Each structure stands twice: as C-alpha cells, then as structure tokens.
Length: 376
Image 1 (cartoon, rainbow, N blue to C red):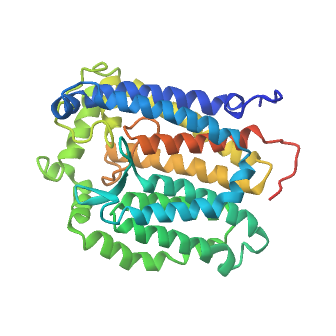
Image 2: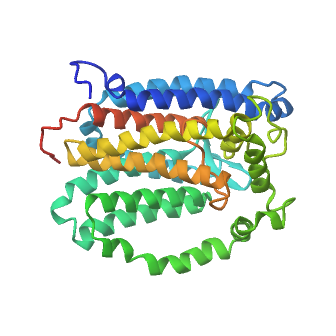
C-alpha cells in the first residue's frame, strides 16, 4: 500500500479507484447503446439517458471524494442519525404527494430534476449502523439479546417499510448484508440460523400468495415454456448472450435493445454487454468487479479498527451480492429481480450511493496500518 503522507485516500486505493472509474465509463457507453431506441421513442433524442447518467457520474465523483475525505471513524458518530434518516425517507415514499408511483410501486421521491430512491440509501445506512453496533457490542456478541436480536429487529423494520413499496429484491440484499455482517462480527451461527423456520410462512405469503412473484419463480424454472409472455424477458436476455459469441456484435449493433428486451439499460444491461461485447467483454467486466471485491475483502481483513473491518466487510458484501444477483438474473441463474448492476446500470441514486460506499471503503483501506492492533 502507498503510504505517501497527505495523499488523498482515493489515490492511495488505486485498486478500488481505477476499476470503479473504468466500470462507470463502460456503463455510460453501454447505457447510450442500450437505451438509444427507447430514448428516441420516448424523448425524441438518442442521448437522453446517456446525458443524465453522465451528470450522475459527475455528481458521484464529488460524493466519492467527500466520502473518502472523512476518517472512517467519523461515520460512527452519525450511525444512528443516518439510520433514522433512512427510515424517515422510506416512510416518506409511502406518503401520498411525496412518493412517486410508477407501475404500481412507490419507490421514489421527487427532487425536481431528479428522482431519489430511498431504498438505495437504506442499504448504506444499514451497513454503517451494523458496523458501529456490532463493533461496540463485541464483548457480548455471543449474547442472543445483544449480538443478534437488535440487528434482526432493525432489518425487520426496514423490511416492513420496503414491503409496502414493494421491493422484494432490496429486502433480499438487506438480509444478506445484515446476516453476513453479523457472521463476520462473530455472532453465534446458531443464533443466525434460528429465524429459518420463520421464513417458511414469510416466503409463502410474500411469494406464493402474490401472483406475479409466483409467476417469476415458475418462469425461472422453465422460461421457454412461455417465451412470449411470462418468459419474455429471460428468453430475450439469453438470446442476447447467445448471439454475442466470443467477441460480440459490436457496440451499437445489438438487436435485443431494439424494443425487444425490456429494461435494457437498467436491470438487463449485462445482457446487452454480452450481446455487443461478447464473452470477452463479459469476462472483462467480471474481472474488474473481481479486483474491487478482492481488495474489499483484504481491507476488511487488515483494517486497524473493528468498526472499519466490519464496515468494510459490509460494503464489499453490498457490492458483491448486487453483482451476483444482477448477472445471475440476466443469465437465468436466479428469478427476475429489479436490481441494478453497480457502476454500470442507468440510475442516479444507485450510482451515487455505490460511489459513496467506495469512498468509505477507500478511506478504511488507506488508513490501515498493518502493524497496529485492532481497536474498536
């Protein structure tokens, strides 16, 4: 690690900075390619989504710089404030006149020129709270009422608010983050497995009693059984990968974005990458993600504070689970979920929060002293 005095953390953590910037730049190019047909049809210009993503990218660079500038211990002092803000924003989405309804969902707040998705902020808020709480409670981490119960209750509160949006994919991500961070912090495995029996009725009511979610599960099992209706997205996503071959059709030359594949610039942008950049492009993207995740794991392992270590693990898990789910959905490994591909998919809130997470992770990594014993 570069220990040059007074060097800003983002320049010390080049293994995080450069892959993230490259992925953002690839994202802007692929958003232009994937959204051009939709943009022309809806906004009468080819560049609408690309221009907005470029603005979001500029904003996210500022957020990255600011987030990395504060010592990571600084965030401990505001963990509860950030948590309360996230809960307030999740509640505001459900209030008529404040939240925006689109497609039967209430997931956005109108900020004038832009829309803000509180669920994205909630992921970062949960990570910071968990990092603070789990590090503070280390002496009693094996106690069920101290190490497990308070964090499970916070996750439950978040989940209840998000169910009403509804956004089941975000609940899954929050659950993985919460349980993953508790595991890393040393919460007893028996305590972590205790809620499993309770998941059976929850899954029944949230999946099997909700028709569109049940349809997604059945379609995932056999998308080709109904390729023109329920299986339409997945089959066209797989066609995109299949037609890409080794080197792809070329940027801008894919066909699935031509109003065949729904959401080609958001949820299914990885499919367009597979079609236009081929297997080589797909492996390049995954390789860049791999560099970020490996560095994130090393930062979590070597951080000189417990808060930094647990928080770095949460931030790495946060990015990793979204990468796995988004790419898995595009390849029909998982049922369809509305999650963006970090740094690449169109979406201002997602990009800004992802870069804020990277900034905090960079600060943890840049401030690590391998010779110093871990402190809280």
